[in-house]
Length: 279
Ligand SMILES: [Zn+2]
Image 1 (cartoon, rainbow, N blue to C red):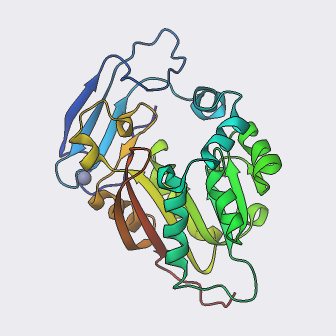
Image 2: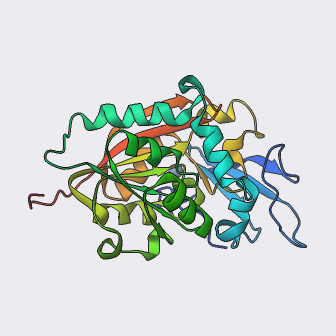
Image 3: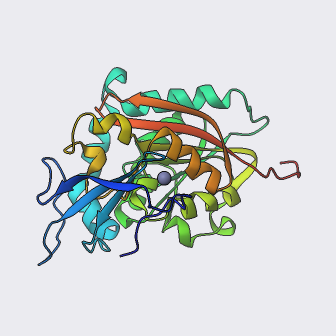
């Protein structure tokens, strides 16, 4: 498997192994790893404090079926409805929608509904809430069941596929692209994020959420931020490096302790090169 990279100037030379695992931490999804030995670790860069997973297990089938099987099984609809019914103070999504709506007040869209592309939509609670707020929502997910669920239950336009393999002619261009806890799952998050610029309308923005390794690590190696499916766990510094390398300005960064318990960094980004053409 390819080594995770942040295209970081220190190029892994300042990294030290901080956490080692020879058995899955409690709560981690059990993937079918066949005859492979469970063994992995996390390295941390002493310079930017970014965390890299060092993991030689073959995880290639993870996002086609195994991830969704392990996460939701066939309980898509039931899980969606349960999360929708959470009281606002218990819902990560309620706070996320509020952050996004507050941010976009500075960039009002006139004469039409603002448009959202949510990449890696999973259950689709976030686009559902954004649709309620008057947004025209589109989702993209690599799992067929997530896409079916998005069309029938969430009621949004949905595309099946890997973001690295689709183009704006198929999917469209948007006022806001969201990558909520997506980039840590890919080996090269810079490569994925840099593609987002091509799917933005003029004045468009990107919102990202990433696991916060700095705060999570103070609570030990068993934290979900360090589970097997993450190739990367971020610091404030490495978040801005990711954005910079992918061609974005970091407009704001916030450190969250979410109602679900997750330690998260979130940021709003703007492309460095703004298209001169009007919408
Ligand atoms: Zn570094």
